[in-house]
Amino acid sequence: MIKRRSLLLGGAVAATSAASATGAGVLLLSAPASSATATAGIDPADIAKYALKMPVPPTLRPHAASATTDYYRMTMKEAYKEVIPGFQTKVNTFNGSFPGPVINAWSGRQAVVTQTNNLTVPTSVHLHGAHVPSSSDGGPMDLIATGGGTKTYTYPNQQAHANLWFHDHAHHQESETVYRGLTGTYLIRDNAETRLGLPSGNHDIPISIRDARFDDAGQLLFEMDDFFNRTVILANGKAWPYFEVAARKYRFRFYNTANLRSFQLALADSSTFSLIGTDGGLLAAPFVTQSVSISPGERADVVIDFSRYPVGTELELKNIIAQAPGTPVDVTQVLQFRVTRTERDTSVVPAKLRTLPALPTPTVQRSFSLLMDESQAEPAYAYINGKEYDPQRIDTTVTYGTTEVWTVTNSNQRVPHNFHVHLVQFRVLERNGVAVTSGPESGLKDTVPLGPGETVKLQATFGGYRGVYLYHCHLFDHASMGMMAQMQVV
Image (tube, rainbow, N blue to C red; front, top):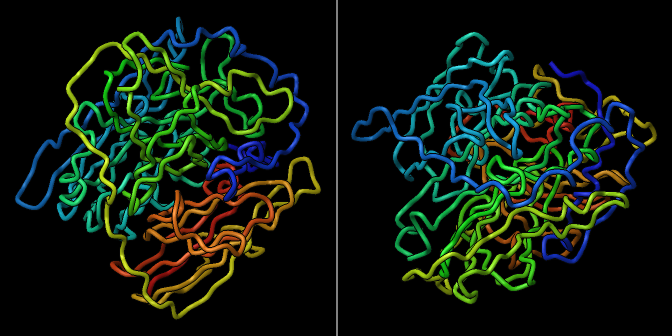
């Protein structure tokens, strides 16, 4: 169990804002001095880049099915994987896969997933971005016991196509178990998405991106105050891998599964690509851009056309987010695409992708403040509206079926946060007083970044299910420190 120590997170290096969402820049916080312990471990400069092939996470097949439901089994357990060349690293896994497997669900068809916990710590599996009953939401106190404890989660999938993922949410433990690998991908598909003709099958690739740090034996080294030393970048569980592509269009669904670090992804030649979707599925129309930013928990769904490159091209995917002075250059590298062949391509990126749901007239307005104490090197707690998370307290009571506007402010001057709401997908109405009408934040979202001093307005309709759900900062350490609260839909 991790201790309730906090960090004035170097996540400030990862602070995203409306500007960074379109590639314009970020706010910085100088890195704290490293402790003697923090200086130990493998230097990222000594790790061979683009030596390992990036795997595609395996697809989990149901073990049984009925007319309405698919049934799955997963086991949380430790396994050894070659994360960096030449070492076998112990990681937390679902079914022995790092990152975990992909569940391909279908909108309107229920999925029932039985989780077994063979790890040494209690867990709680949260399906991030899902519209589910509170009993299957994976709350921080709804724990699966160690030593083979089980829990069955029911996911009705009564929502449109979406890029979801699952991870541990056990309070005070999630930072370490997720850091050690306990994540996986959950895609909801529907006819509206499928009939568009986007790249599919072997050309539709989920990529989990995160950072890590390793000791001299190649094992993951976890410390709560260690953002600036996590400078090894992983893509689908491999350090700086390569991925072979044909000279055609590919769809890449990027997931930021890091505890604290944001990424601004761009091709090394600064060429454009199409952002087609985010957390809650497709945008209304493609957004052509040279970069896309994702804070912890966010997703970016993009199409890259490699037909413009000759066979033999090696092209880097870079992390161009601004870094604190002294950060290793290795952090700016993510993975390498290798164009190895030609291939027939009938896929398209339509000019119109979907019609987003209408925005009902809101009837309730609320305000939320995210705050950590910046006056101490290691503040003890983090707050929403001045209160630390208390599982016995309901912070917000929401009337079932109402549409609300939430104004969320990062009240810190240096520390970034982001904001994730369980149960619903929301719409970002404004950022810093400027209306959001197009671009990366114009679609359905469940996580939104807030740089220091920033304010966003969100709108959501709270229907479907009643019960207790969370809203919190999705920088895992902030949530572990108490930057979480509970709402009850009644």
